[in-house]
Length: 157
Image 1: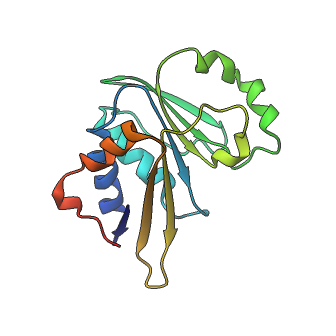
Image 2: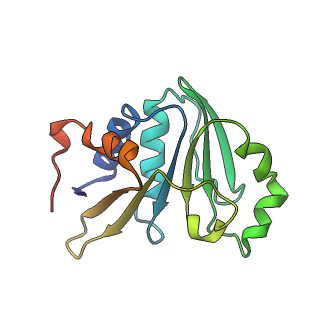
């Protein structure tokens, strides 16, 4: 399933709409090159879930945890990771034991230490400067989240 975004605001709105379909515990991998909108999308999801504090990219901290109206949300940016084992230094095992929403940027850098994705969102920039998002549900439960998005967010192929 594919969408095009003409602006960051539309990307955040898409994230906000997705947030309304998510259960309290889910794992979403955010993939794509630098600057394609992964953090922007995460901000849209987290704002829609009631986070009012500043939502910054966890590029330097690797992990930011937020209290949402549905429970905990962990936003990870693993770009700076050199080895997946480094996740042990931030106590990743402690986080895995509690149900939460996981938004993981650069998940391939944490392979073997992260929960499996329910939904993978791949973002990239098209030659005409529009942002493109492909959603790949990893099972039927996640497919239902994407299918529940409002008609106003009509899929584009």
